Image (cartoon, rainbow, N blue to C red; front, top):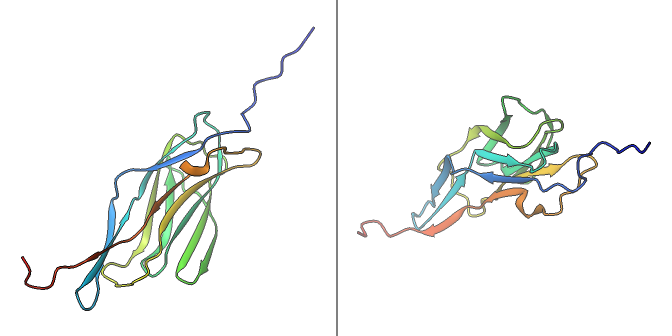
Length: 160
């Protein structure tokens, strides 16, 4: 008698994250009124794994002068914050996603949104999903969403 092993989850899984339209925006104008920026902040994301495999962590990186106190919800579960590391103006928060299945909606909420603060060097906002133990993602290009501040020249006062 020949036995057939049970099907196991593939060690190669293409995890993906995509942002829904930005639901928050942080804007500011320079003190002289000549420059401005807009940082679009998506806060709702679709997480996807074609095989329904579990993922390991979700990492959120942001400019701590503008944002702070992130919490996350995935399918009515609030992943634990594993750790937060701050280096200069950037904070990276890593949340435990182990045991949660993808193909879910993830929502981020920030306790701090500092609007109207002018900086010439706003750091990017990044959300990334990373594979769990014993899995390898062959295409990491679709594992993150990045939002970068767009700087613009402002028309002089009184210009139509």
